[in-house]
Picture 1 (cartoon, rainbow, N blue to C red):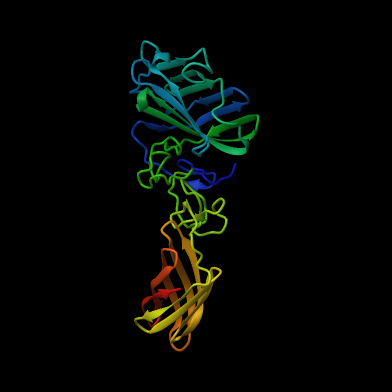
Picture 2 (cartoon, rainbow, N blue to C red):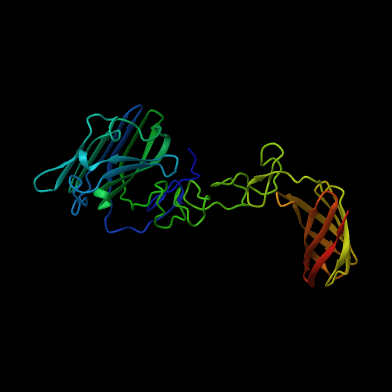
Length: 344
């Protein structure tokens, strides 16, 4: 898999650095071993002396869960470990979870054992396909409704059938793909209040206009030829909309201007054209923006005399089948002004 969309926790993994603010119950622990074997085996082991179960009672408290992730939303899977499957010793210092029906029952996880300094998890199904090549896998065990979380990150290698990792470093507990915006994540899946509908696979917000299809975007960049299927065109908000019903090819506009330019004429054809003013002429380009039936032109033109390089921004509005008008603005190093005119 590619590194695009990768999110790492607490250190540089897969090329992206992300650090979440740890809560009091979060425990970043060193992982001893992670094994995944096709089609149905997963094993997690930690012997980190800092593991503490103080404050948790999964046998009598809230439900627990375990999450496996490779740092993408697609491959982030959480399995339920309900309170009814847990037992504890009399001292309340060792806890066991059992599901003899695994991979059926509440989840594919068959056994969990945890006490101070020790953690072991085994399951009878894979959370996602066995990696092919080098891959980091994050494992988070949430105990007793989150009273304690144990977070491990394993660097290992797989061949598509078997994956093995040893001695993973301790990690903080931010997980991209669990639908909870945490740490420095801008969003996470459906928890996207900062950019509704625009959350990407690496828990950042999509940016319309950067040329990369992200989040809920249907196309990017806007106005790009072939970005949308069929006759649809890519609008300025990176959605595919119906094409403009009237072509701007061959449109001729003329009118008056304020500022350094007193008058102008514009001839557009095939997506571009020329601008002629009382101060000189230059190139011009435009693009369609639907379904508002507004065509925006943005270009740079070189004018004679002392005006130099100017920027041109015009709006040609289609009012029905035949009526068109133009308004816009221009700017130069020496000053700018507004444009108004008619098109036919």
